[in-house]
Amino acid sequence: MHRLHAAWLCLALAAGAHADPVGEVSTAFILIGANHKVVVDAYDDPKVKGVTCYVSRAKTGGVMGAIGLAEDKSEASIACRQVGPIAFSDAKLPTQEEMFNERISVVFKKLRVVRMLDRKRNVLVYLTYSDRLIDGSPQNSVTAVPLGNVPLPPG
Image 1 (cartoon, rainbow, N blue to C red):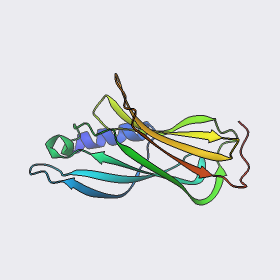
Image 2: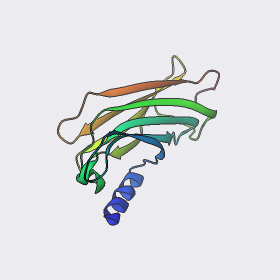
Image 3: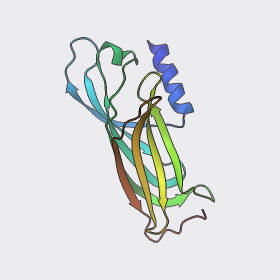
Image 4: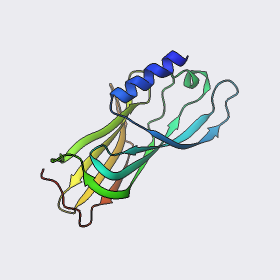
């Protein structure tokens, strides 16, 4: 069991996801295996220093969830905030870019966060959604971080 969790952790890190767990709450008691939960993780934007995104999502419990084989639901919510001085780590910031992704099923489903740059309003927009190999979900959540007087890098 520990090898399976380690393998999935390596895959998540290789995909660019680096989550810092913030907390969790149980939503349903499961007699055998882990409870169903809502988890909250923090993701620092790798290209925009000073911005952290908090993503909450369902995590399936039971025996299959405990061994990492359950498929989590597509619902997720996101809130990104300025947590320090904003600085851009790259000289160029794309208009739209996937910030990170994380597997929410063994093979077929991923939770994704995309950063979009609204140059006209000087705002960073973050969108979270899940996709599936064959049929994705239209459920999504969006948040924005105003940049105020921070000058944007060239695009």
